[in-house]
Length: 102
Image (cartoon, rainbow, N blue to C red):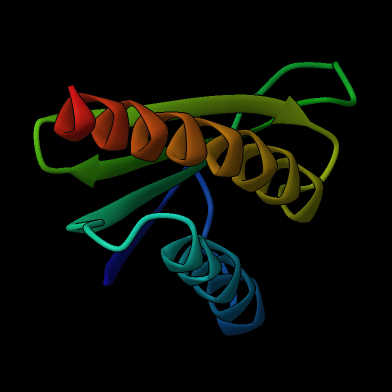
């Protein structure tokens, strides 16, 4: 699976990029037909502590799954988004399996 990572309003260091790619690639265990993933890391210029926005879009045949999280750190956001995507991918796979059985 190809993971595209974009950082908006800042330059992401290589450690953060590696972390994101490793976490997102772990989603392949839950759905074998993932085409690619797009990750957007954004910093909002606000006084809020939770000013880091992590948005992950997973493309699978027939649909795309999108999760957006506002957190204090990008690592926290990526973990939360990946956990949510795991559930969505499992649900998508079950629906796919159910439609094959019917």
